[in-house]
Each structure stands twice: as C-alpha cells, then as structure tokens.
Image (cartoon, rainbow, N blue to C red; front, side, top):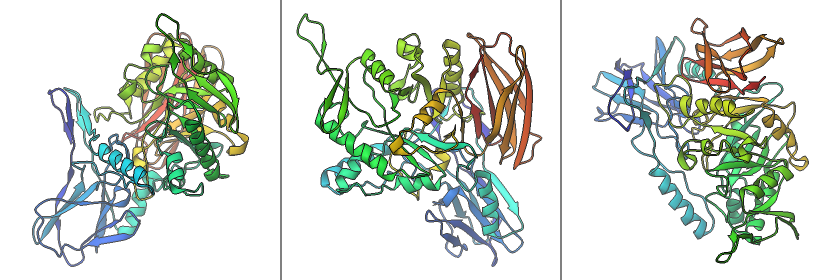
Length: 545
C-alpha cells in the first residue's frame, strides 16, 4: 500500500492483511508464542467484532490447510519504529468475519506496553515502575513528511507444506532472528541502559544474571557496550558514591563476560561537549564529572585535581571541562562518538561542534546509527538523519564513522529485539578477554574496520583494489530477501555523489560478487552499501584517499 499526505507533523500506524479465507474442517491458524511454543486456533469461536492481536514469536502467523499453507508477516526491520523497549505488542492479527470466513494480517499497536519492572528493594522497584510508565508515553510511530509516498508492506509466503515447514522457510529470511556469524568478525552492539550496577546491588549478589544477557547471546551477539550512569546510579557524584557504583559496574561486566561474549562498561555523558555522547575506554577507568567552583569575579577552578590515587580504586580522573574530558580520552586511549545525532538531546549535534578540537581529534569516532525516525518513503534505514550525517562528517573532516546503537533499556528473551536492532560486524579474529582489556575492539573501530548491518544483508569480503585514478571496489554481498540495489557513495569535501546499481534481478538467498570500477580523481572518500527489497541493508565505513 502506498499513501501520502500534505498535512504537516503527521505520525501514523497501519494494519494490512487479507480477508476471505475459508473456514473448513482442515483449516487452522498457527503461530509460535513468545516462549516459542506452537499455538493454534481453528475458528470454532463466535464472530469477532475487532481484530485479535497475536503476540506471535518472530512476527509470523500461518494459515494451514490440507492443500498447503500461507505465512503472513511484516518487513523484518522497517515495519518497526523506535521505542525504549522491545516488548512484543502483537504484530499479527486474525479476525473471524463470519461462520465461513476469516481475515489475517499484520498490525501495529495503539499504545506501548511497558517492560516488567525488576527490583528486590522497594525503592528500586518503585523507581523501575515509574520508568516503565514513562516509556508508555514515548510511542513515536512513523513520521510522514508532507508529500512523501509512504510505502506500507505486508508479506505472504505460500507453500505446499505444513505450518512448521513454512515457518522455517520464512525464518531463513532473518537467519532465524540471529545475527549470522562471519569468520574473522565479532558482532557488536552498543548503547544500552541496563542499570547493571543498580540491579546487581539491589539483588545483593554479583552473581545475579540479568535477563538481557541470554537475550543478547541468543541473537548471536559477541560484544555488548553498555551505557550505565545515565538515568541510573549517581552519574554526577564526584566522590566514593559514584566510584563504588563504578566498581560494581566493572565487576559485574567482568563476571558475565565469557570466551565468546564480552561486556564493555561504557558510559553516555552529557557533560561538557554538547549533546549526548558515548565514552568507550579500552579497560575499566575510574573517573567523575567534577563541577566547576569559583567565587564572584574569580575564574572557575576545578573542584578536584585532574587525577589522583584513591584506595581501593587506584587512579581516578576528575573532568570538568572540554579540555579535561579530551585529556582523559587521550590519556586512556579512549573513543567517543555522538549518540542519537541530530535528534533527541543531541539535536543540532555534532554540527554545532564540527570545528571544535574534540570533533577534529582522532578520538572522536563519529556518531551512532539507529532506525530513528522511521519514514517509510525512504528506501534505506535512517536515510536522512544518519547516512546523510555520515557523508557530511567525512566532507567536513577526516575519517568519521557510524556505529550502530540500540539506545534501549531492559530486555528479556521473550521480547522482539531482533527487528529493532542493527549491529556492527567488527573485523577481529578473536574476542579479547575482559581481564586483558579490549583495545583491539577500539583499534578496529578507530580504523573503520567494521560494517553495519540489519542482519539480512551481509558482506563476506570487501576492499578497494588498484592505485592511482583507476580503482575498483569489490564486495561479496549475501542476501536473504530479494535484492534492491547496491551503491557507491563518495564525497569531494563539499558535495556527495552516488552510483546506484540495481539488484532486483537477483533471487533471494543469493551471494553476488560486485566489482565496480570508479575514478578516484576529485574524491576525498568512498563507501559501499547494499539494500534489499524490504529495506534491510548493510554499509561499510568511508575510506579516505
């Protein structure tokens, strides 16, 4: 379905399906519940007044009959708009229209359903309940700018097999909702407010395993960069309250890291640089955001020394200005990037600091990538806010990159996390041990040795071949959905250009080798991207000449 409006400031939801399916003795509707158990309905009840929402696992329902089956499901990523949590809101429906016919389809919910609050102590329980209720008010829906053509998709998959077989065929489109392992790469996600310190402290044991850990492992994720000390703990405390909380944060991250799963204790400050931004250190680092002090007519002075040794933490840094925050990043070989750029609390950033020393520094990796806002007139995920910013940053300065982020809160194995998350495939042969630090992860990010993917479109290999003016970008692209197009994107320091190559002739479940010649003269940088017919995609980071 395609529709447009000329009205300003429109958000919308949609439902789509087919009616007229015949009710017979051999017809039933089947789906997996959130615990992956098979459920069914045989339309023996009374006629429905409204559509019945199904909280189907992986967003798939199947009409099964003696002669075959048809699965009904939405696009695996672009159907979903940004939320704080990923609780299953019931993305499928059925409706018994009469004693002889019924309808099925996909739907979007009318309202948010908050996460299940956790907490052992009454204080933390009440705080989490309050936060859960706040999330119900943050229900973004789609953005429909005036005059844009909004493309709203529903998919039907027909087969002669039964419900289990057709469900397995549909799930192959998303690798069974798993980010497929690739040799030589680690799957990394970033920016999650799980409040690990608070949950472990409230549970009274460092050996309490939060529900998000098995959730991430089941998705095929190897590296999780967290962002505590944001809406939790005491981020602005400059003494032992924060330092004790940091110690729990570090110890908990180490306790639940494994040989195939690394937890990186990051942080999202909003102190001196402007907007929100991510700090990622190569090891646990104790530091505070110290306020400035100064009397009337006197220049402000740091409340604490920049660095001191405090038992039992060891070296502790105190930052109070852009200069001291930059110094900290340099001294500890850390990285930073702008979180949710050009929106939310980073609206106007990093544009406002494009000429500042911290942005021009090689410690500033770039910005984050997230499907926010969702505009169904765009063929790519986060086409305008994110990808346009990626190109702008590389025209402004040296190499800057987009790191996929989640920016969500607590999650559980029954949540629909996969469709609301993009990941980074970081080029690393092996996963660092927590106790050894994770500098190899930061080195790969700083060098741009990673690509971003929604999971359905993957890059097995890619490089630039040749020297001088005549060069070739080569890439092996792995598709599950039918392809749409691949593109080379480049900039000359002021403007951006695109070369788009159609991929609509490719069948699904194809690996295709691309060898695209280009002229390097006049180009400052170049990158590659591939997008499928459902709006899923992957892109490399820009390579500067």
